[in-house]
Image (spheres, rainbow, N blue to C red):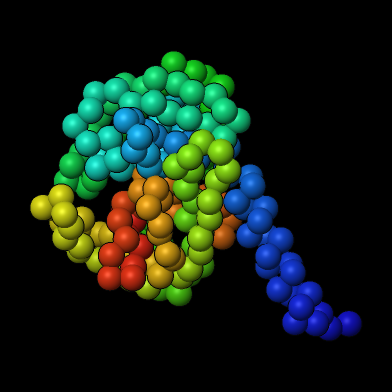
Length: 186
């Protein structure tokens, strides 16, 4: 028996919803003084990965989860050349995101971008990869040598959020949106 088009779309929609729901506990708000972006729980030791421009030159920022928990974090590492920063919170109860690989990405591959800039509900957008290993210059005055470029619409607050493959594994960290393209660090 053949599936109708609407059944196929319903299955696709359900699969996207499931990936977003399963990964949302790993997506956190990173904020300070009324500004916020997104971060990703990297491991069970309380490390949070985010975009360096989200934390600017600060040494400490607040991290909030979708269940309402709030943590003070310390910036323990940063790489302004790739726009990455590593934060540390004192918690071992956070759910780390599943990591994928960016070594075999292909143009046309489906991706899902998540964000949580308000510590409430995770936001999601989707698209496809439009280019891989692309050198991209940005406002940080440095170039990302091997950026992942997507057509996923990244709204304010998506910086520091995960770029996921169809299995819900993180393949990149979203750092910018310009010229109608999402830019992620692999």
